[in-house]
Amino acid sequence: MRRFLAEPRAFLAAALLHPVERTRVETSGQRLRRRVVVALTIVAGAVALGFALAIPPGESEFYLATVGVAALWVVGALASGPLYLGEGRARDGGRSRGVVQGVLLGLMLLGVFLAGALVVDRIPLLAAPVEDLLDHARFGSLWIVALITAVNGVAEELFFRGAVYASLPRSVNGIGSTALYAASTLFTGVPLLTFAAICLGLLTAAQRRVTGGVLGPIASHLTWSLGMLFLLPPTLALGG
Image (tube, one colour):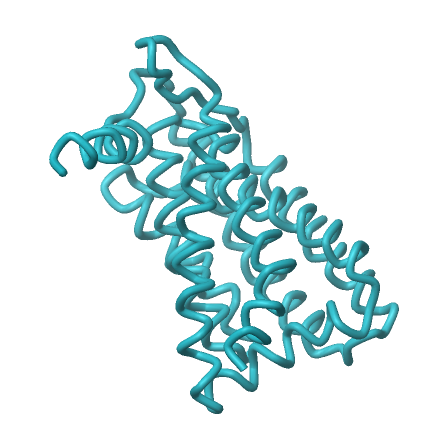
């Protein structure tokens, strides 16, 4: 059993605990610029996200509104200052971009959420908002929703694990970026979406700390979010 657990333990340690060495220095002026841009973007993005999810399922305005939210995150991220792809640790001791690690971590989180969905589905107070959220995929074009989900996933990582993370003090940038990411979902009125943002935010913030960039977090986010989009409805149906 110990040998069986050694491989996943080593993987998690490399992917989430031990940062890759790097040297980056920002001036106080650059840091101030990041913080101002981040603050303005978070307020605008949170309001826009709440507005987008308030649009009735199937309406074409929903697609435009969610693309607008993604555009806000991207513009805010790029305007804040330099962003980096980052590097992960390869098994041979070299470096990688952390994409494979990101996908595997995203799959692990997806499995946990799909299992939890079977429990949530039996609690009407929690299940109803989730069903309302899924209606956007049921009554609209699933593939367009998938494309928008992917675009928003990339945009959110560029902003929250790129700009926001870099703007905060090193001692709190993981928790702080996760808290702000979760706060941006509060206007949606879906408590489980905020809970998901906390879980995903903590995972991707840990990746950001290790790799120093956004590519690994993007891989995790896309794996989890697209997996939830396509697999959550049949999982809920399976649970009855």
